[in-house]
Structure formats: structure tokens, C-alpha cells
Length: 366
Length: 252
Ligand SMILES: Nc1ncnc2c1ncn2[C@@H]1O[C@H](COP(=O)(O)OP(=O)(O)O)[C@@H](O)[C@H]1O
Ligand SMILES: [Mg+2]
Image 1: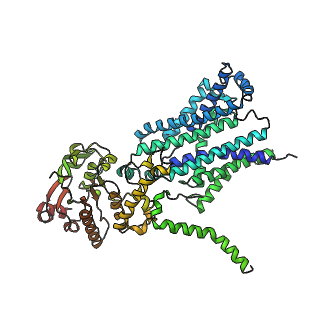
Image 2: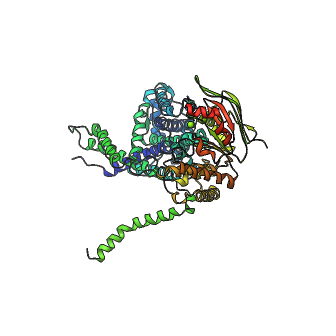
């Protein structure tokens, strides 16, 4: 009898959920708010992962006075020992690389904007898609980061905790906290004059330009934030799986993230998170079934995408705008117009109505 | 007094198509001037050149004495020259309210660093909101603040487009067929409203309309384009009597 580790399953789901929720939220800022069809999301995810792996391993090895190449077996072996010695070092290197991943991926996203200006908005998606593929092919041949083998031995921030359960619980909690902070940040960003301008650009770029908006500059800002957030997701991934290689960062990752965003609702941060939750759950669940019941006639891994496709079709059939559709940008300016009060009143009534019904039910004796 | 808008010898070709040939015209401050001409005569192209959509092949454009050909559309908007489109280009999936609020230039809350901190842009935001709410009241749109623009009627959309223009520092408006597809009586309503705006806010209007009759009661001066050339100009009465104009319209 194989026992199924429910907690382990949940921890792994939550971690992948956080990583993908950050990605789909970042994609949503670009696509759902600013109207930039980014088909190269995975590139910035990869940049975040590689920056974190490279910097963290370099710091550990050089502090220990070892100068093995990062990709060598010796380096990997040494990292196992080094990673469990100094809790302070692990945690501070984690935080440092989190920031670096954000800044470097963000800066590259910002710079990428400029060549795509010349080819026009319609080709932006294809340009970043090719950028991602070129980067992946480059990494496959770039020896300092281990070419096709990648880097192994990335120092887990909690490697010094012996109890594996506690270690994973702590890591998952940290990733969830990062997700929540980024969500709060994204919410504030979109419900601000900047979010409003982003929406206007998505709606009609030419009109926004005529209304005096510096469209390229706004797009650059959004790409900085969106790519930086993807970099953070990549950083978390690198520490979570401990080993990265170019084949993790294939274009299908980008399309998974698109699916999450479309399912949850384009133009809504909450939607992006819900979409990521559902698809990562299906993904983890099919993987778990495969593990618990090996040798099924149909390998669940193969029907995974059928299930996800079916969910997306059903949701879009009944809710074409996704599970949580786009809404307005709620800045304080709404306070001075009346309809907002009415809307709040209606919302309050809607919230209260189930309670009213229940109390009525009790009072009337069923 | 120097004219607020001055177009000097502007020529614009699209490939082999002559859209504008050697067009020169002036618009005085606080005037209401018409631009008429049959379809395809180059009226929209002239607006596109003035507002920086296309650089002219030859010629110059001056606004408030400053040369503006070669500037980007957003820079020209900032100088106070606002245009509307033949097919209104509003932000259709946004509320009427947001369409107004989004317009003012360089808002503090548009900065990446300040945007997340409401405190830093709250005052400015409330001032913008006050201005927007009083404009919407003037334009009879205040009951629609929360509606999506796509839910408005055609006439309301036209009104919103002008109201939105006033959210910026608009001094002069180029209106591309503000009464297109609107019945004659409603067209008269729109034009008298524009005249009221001109009087109340001291604005300048340059208006495209391809039906001569409806515009005539409202403008002081008219330019007539035909096949990209300036065919005639003068007061509405003069232009209506010009045999060249009659010929161009009947020949259409
Ligand atoms: N972007 C463009 N590319 C090619 N030809 C154009 C373009 N814009 C306008 N034209 C041509 O220029 C001429 C004038 O068009 P337009 O200015 O739209 O006329 P109007 O607004 O007076 O109806 C037409 O022959 C039209 O086909
Ligand atoms: Mg036209």
C-alpha cells in the first residue's frame, strides 16, 4: 500500500502555485493592462533563475576559497556541504539574489522594449519570443553556466534545517508571502493613475498618444516591473528545485502562463492568481496520480493538457471574460461621484442577502 | 493679432497619391472655422499632418507662433492642440469617469515609484476629479460616470470626446466631423453647443464637415479643399456663391 503524502502534495502545489501566480500576474500587467502581447515571458523567468543560481553558487564557493567551475561535479559536491553551515549566509544570499533577479530581469525587459519599438506593436510578441529562444540556445552552449547540463547545487535558503518538512514548510511560506506582497503591490499599481494610463494604452494606443501620453515610456515601465516580477519567480524556482538547465525554460512555459491568465480573467490581478491556482492544481494532481498509481493504462501526464484545455473551454463558454473579469481602476477620485456610493450599497446588500435569507428561513420556521 | 494656427505650403503624398498640395491657411484665436470638401479631398490628412501623425513632405505648421511640424502627437497635445477623430477614439472599455481622469499630463501617480503610494498623489487626483466632474456636468454627461463608454449613444460619445479634450490644457480643437452620421437637427444641437463652449471657455475650433449647409450658420470663415488643393476660402456666404465650389460639389 502506497501512502499518499497529503502535506507534501500541498506544499509542492503551493510553491508551484506561488511561482506561476507571480508569472501570470506579471504577464497580466503587460497584456491585461498595457496591451503588450508578451510571448517571451519565459526569458525573464529564466534570467531570474540563472542570475540567482550563478550569483549564489559563486558567493558560496568563493567564500570557501574554492575555485571550481560552477558546473563541475566538484562544485556541486562542495555546495551540499557548504549550504548547511551558515544560516545567516544562506538567508542573506537568498534575499540578495531575489533583489538582483528582479533588477536584472527588469532592466533587460526595459531595454528589450526599444528595439521592438521599431518593428511596431504587432511584432512585439514575436520579437520577445525569439529573444527567449535565442537566450535559451545561447545558454545551451555557454559553458560557464554548464551548457545543456545547467547548474546544480543552488544553496536552498533553509538547507541548514535538518527536518525536511520544516524546511519545506518554511520555504513555501516564504514564497506565499512574496506572492502576497507582490499582489498587494500590483493592486496598488493598477488602481493608480499609472494603471489608468496603462489601460488607456491597451484600449487604443494611438488615442493615448494623441491625448499626450508618452506611450513608449509607459510601456518601458510596465515591462520593467513585469519582467522583474518574472525574475523573482525564476529566483524562487531555482532555490526550490536546486538545479536548473536551459530545457526548463522552453516557450511552452510562456503559453502555460497565458492559459492561466486567460482562464482567470485578463485585466484582473485576482483572476491571474486564481487561474494559476487551478492550472497548477491540475498539473500537480495529475503528477501525483501518476506517482500513486503507477502503470495506469492512460498516463495522467498525457491527459493533463486535455483536462486543462477542457476547463478553459468550459469557463470561456460561460464566462468569456474569464473567472474574474476586468474591472475599473479604483482610485480615490471615485469618491466624489455618486454612483460609487450606490455601487457600494448594492455590493453590501448583495453580501448581506444570504444572511437575510437564512435569518428569514429561521424566522419563518423553514 | 497673429493667428493661433498657421499652415504654410503643406504638401503630403502617399506613394503616388496626392493627398495635400501646397495648402496654406490661418486660424485666428477664439474663432470657429470650417474645413469642407468632398470625401477624399484631404481634410483628415490635413488634421493628421497638423497634429503630428505624419510629417508633411514639404511645408511648415505653426501653433501659437511655435513650429510644430516634426513633433510627436503627444508633444503637440501638450502644447494645447487637441484633435478628435472621424470615428471617435475613446477608451471604450473604460468608464466615462476614467476617460476623463486619464487625460491630464504628467500626473504624479503615473510615476512608477509614486503610483503605489496613494498619499503622494491624492491631492492632485482629487483636483483632477473636481475638474472632471464639473466638465461632465457642463456637457450633460454626469449621469453616465460609471458607464462604460461603449454603452453610450453616438451623440454622447461625441460630447465625451470634446469634454475629454478640455481635461488637458486644450486651447484649440480640431474636430473631425463632430456631427458625422448625425441627423440635421442633432447636428445643429452639436454645433450650437460647440459655439457655447467657444464663448464660455475662450477656445478655438477648426471643424471638418462635408455637408456645407449644416456648418454655415456657425462658422465665421470656411476653407474648401478639393483633391488636396485649397479651392476656395471666405465667409460662408462667399464660399456658397463661389462657382468653383458649386462645381466641385455638383461634380462629385
Ligand atoms: N495613410 C494613408 N495612406 C495612403 N493614402 C491615404 C492615407 N490617408 C489618406 N489617404 C488618401 O489621401 C486622400 C485624402 O484622404 P482624407 O484626408 O482621408 O480625405 P477626407 O478626410 O477629406 O475624406 C484619399 O485619396 C485617401 O485615399
Ligand atoms: Mg475624413
